[in-house]
Image 1 (spheres, rainbow, N blue to C red):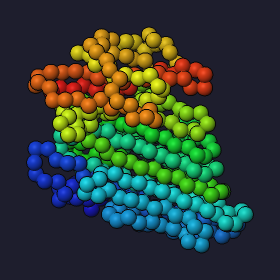
Image 2: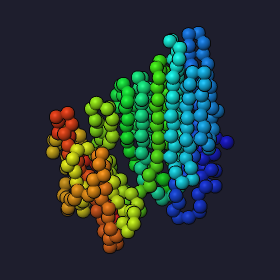
Image 3: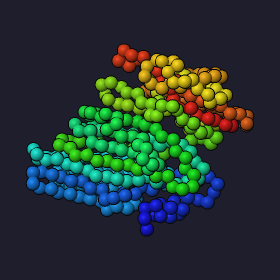
Image 4: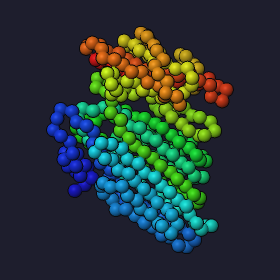
Length: 325
């Protein structure tokens, strides 16, 4: 049985036969996961066979503390995480990792986003790659993000619709290192509230960076299920102390470059109906709780943030989200 057949069979067993299902996930190693120690003329390898990764596990070379550790999804959490630790002891020692896995998402009529969190905490950047949908369009690539010396983190988002056929998210980790190293990548599916849709941005990805700590994240707006008596809550990530949510009755946006503050995306909704600051959570995060509204309404929502970075103005705008009550 090939990997796709395994995923289909597994998701059928996990998913109840209803009009809308919770998203389930299966983590599969497409090829053996291999770690290698090279010390002079000596080469030592350890590997995990290809196939489904159903339990927390690792593959390692204990003599030099080289390890790949994985945490697979559970029934209540469709996410996975990989950590690579390398502590070569010999003066001429080097280590290598070769990991190629796919997180398969299964469900019906569920949209949301995939959150990608990456970390490099060593002197060599390594190579972390994530291809949402496994279509050749790379959503996260540590080389493209120009990682240099550690520590370095990246937090990125990509919209995903899970409806019928399993959705693949391909994860690769490669790269040789000559020094102590810790790399990690976490892939997490976040479901959205009913009646919402990400209609995107003209800027993909729309990255912002924090100088000094070498952290990057994208401007992003999500429509999450509400808490308490809320119908839903919009959750935004951005940068700066000045920020607001913008609401419009239509999706038309200004041409890029109209505002011209900084090099970031400025395709603002052209005819705002209203705006409001929402609630700041600190650290470049804001929420806007939405109470129950009458049926038959349609709104387009976006988030705008403005701040100063290394003496330069940084103005950024998220993707637009459609909400229909």
